[in-house]
Amino acid sequence: MTAIRLVCLGAGAVAFALMALADYGQVLRAKRGAGALFPLGAALLALATALLAADAWRRYDRGPWALAWAAGAALMLGLLIYTLFFALPAGGSGAGTAEPGELRPLVDTGVFALCRHPGVLWLGGFYACLWGALGGWALGAAFALFTALDALYAAWQGRRIFPVSIAGYAGYCRTTPRFLPTRESLRRCAATWPRRR
Image (cartoon, rainbow, N blue to C red):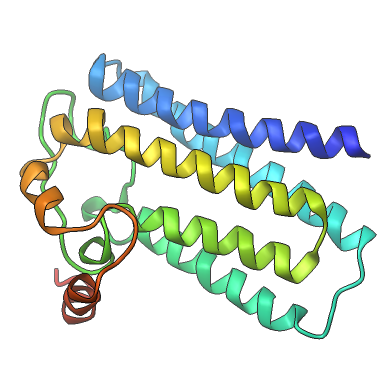
């Protein structure tokens, strides 16, 4: 069983590589088909997570706070889905939602006023809460590994992908923190969420 857990953790790591390749191919190399790697990576990450969660469900007893942790995981997953698919114009998170060479409009309201990469917060929170709800070393490792890989992926996007694919990104970087919200960014987020259409 340990080997299966390690395979799931490895598959999750491969998932982030696929998502990065999607951005690289679509934005930096203008390859139209590269965007398909992003949903493939997301599906692989979801499958690895489901297998790890099912394994933990079978193997470990849940404590008295498991329901509260599970509610936190559901909330974080909902925020992640909202951020990736509904908080952006045309409902798309991939860096290549515009045509190759065309800049996408900047979104700096709502969750994107909170920080430049709110998905990292929600993904990390989801895995932390899932680990709290179900227990086990593998979900703890998934929390640490997948959050770190997501942060690296987002930092790479911020350095290489978004400056050439989002209009006004440099100015956004000067006013909005990368990962950890500040008092001012919390205020701006609250004032502009939900995003005005």
